[in-house]
Length: 103
Image (tube, rainbow, N blue to C red; front, side, top):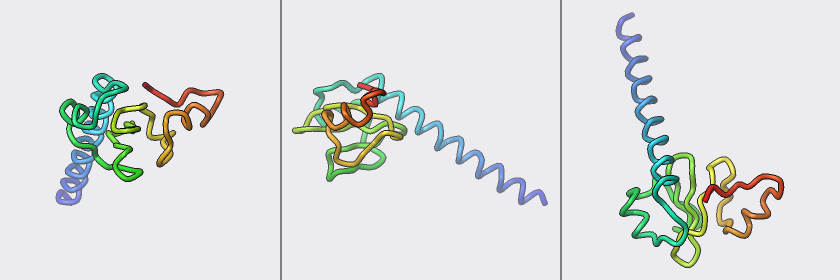
């Protein structure tokens, strides 16, 4: 029975580590990334994205997506509102009653 509890504890520890990594990535992007930054500038501040979308124009960092247009950051949106290949103007009209753009 101890083995089962040990395995559960190990899985729980992995989950906590992953959750902390996601929270840290999200906070770093919100704190450090600004509109107009290039992809190389973003990478230099917050490292490589966890995943990409829309070719290589949308980068995921935890609970946020960095959206690039013409090679520079156009906006940052929460993962819950992310739509593949949407651009800044699309997000502005995505929900006219709630601003989905973080930056």
